[in-house]
Amino acid sequence: MIKVENLDISFGAGSKRVHAVRGVDFAVARGESFGLVGESGSGKSTVLRAIAGLVAHWRGVIAIDGASVERKRTRGLRKRLQMVFQDPYGSLHPRHTVNDILKEPLIIHRMDNRESRVLKALDEVGLGAGYRFRYPHQLSGGQRQRIAIARALILDPEIVLLDEPTSSLDVSVQAEVLNLLARLRRERQLTYIMVSHDLAIVAHLCGRIAVMNRGVFVEEMSSEQLRAGTAEHGYTRQLLVAAKGYDRAAIDQFVEFD
Image 1 (cartoon, rainbow, N blue to C red):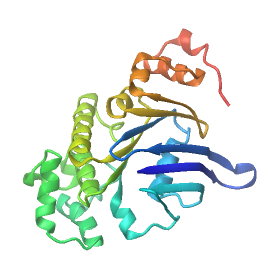
Image 2: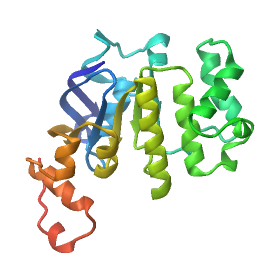
Image 3: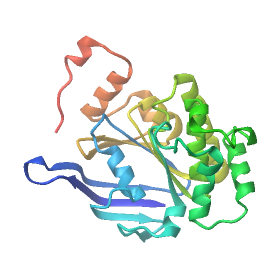
Image 4: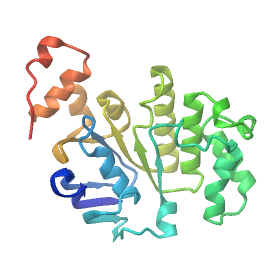
C-alpha cells in the first residue's frame, strides 16, 4: 500500500544545512500497521510528513497503492491518506465547535450526507452526539484526540498516519486511545504508519518496527523481537535500556552512533 525508496530530505543551506532523512527505504502492506521509532531529531516525523505531503522538498520515490505520487498532491490522494497529529490542543481550531471541525473536511471534499457522517464519526470514536456542539476547550485531552481521529476517519481514508498520537495524554488515556486505534484498523482494514519515541506503545499497535537514528534506518524488527529485547544494533539496544527508566550507570555507558 505504501512504498518508499531512497527518501532524502534536507533543510537549510550551506553551514546550516541539516540532512534530516538519508536514503530511507521501506514498504507497508495493505492493512498493516508499521512503526517508526527513535529519539527526538532522528527524522521519523519528517518521513511521515513527507508521505502526508506536508514536506514538499524531498527526493526519492513515494508510492501509494502502486502509483508514484508527486510533491503536489491531488484532492483524491489527500482523501485516501489522512493524518492524526501529536498535539490535540494545537491541531483543533479553538473557535470551532466539534461539528464545524468534523464538517470542514466533508465540505472541502464535497461529500454529501454530512449530518449523518458527523454523528457516525462521533459514535465510532466513543463520544456520541452530546459532544457535537462543544468547543475544544470544553473537552479533555483524550476527548480532543478522539475528535482528531474522527476528523481523519470521516473521509473514509485507506491510510492513516499517526504522529505520536498519545504522547501528550495521561497513561490511562493512552491505553484507551491505542485500543480505539487498534479496533478502528481492524474494522476498517486501515493501513497505519505510526511514529513514536515510546517503544511499548509502538509494540502494542504495530507488527513491524523500524528504528531510526540521525536520518537513517538502523534496524527493522517485529513487535515480538522488540518485546523480547532481541535487538541486533547497538543503538536499538540503548533505546531498549532507556525505555526501562533512568539508570545512571547504564546511561554513562551509552555511546554516540553515526
